[in-house]
Image (cartoon, rainbow, N blue to C red; front, side, top):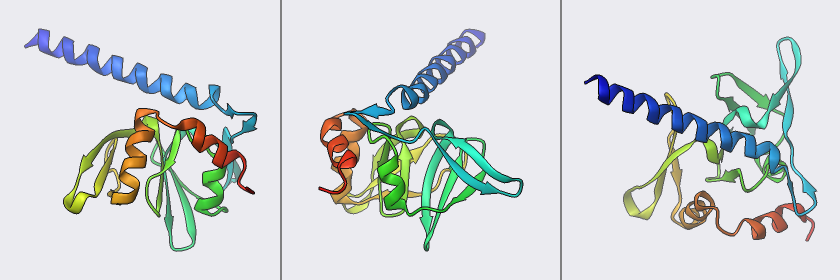
Length: 163
């Protein structure tokens, strides 16, 4: 029994190390093709403006016309920016618009499961994850993003939004 606990503890440590490495990639890969992506955002809090680093974002969601950021520590902030504008500021190799209402960082994704009618269900790490349904049309794109495919094409689209 103790041997199984030790194996489980080592596996958790390995997974935490991998997660931390992915978070660090957010900062190291903030420059893609000469374009810069945000490494933090300023949000309003009860104490004034607060700087939140992108590596601490658990997910971003839109509710009505409000964009909300949920942090890994459980805190939530309202961002004075549309989901569309935010998407352009985030590194597409690390963040993906997985549905009309959600943007998630790769390092917070646990799995992409098949759902009814060919849709997908994105499962995030941690407690109380939101239900994120991925449409059939986005499911292939999300799967490719999780696998790291076609990042250069995405970066060109993001860097040159006027084209």
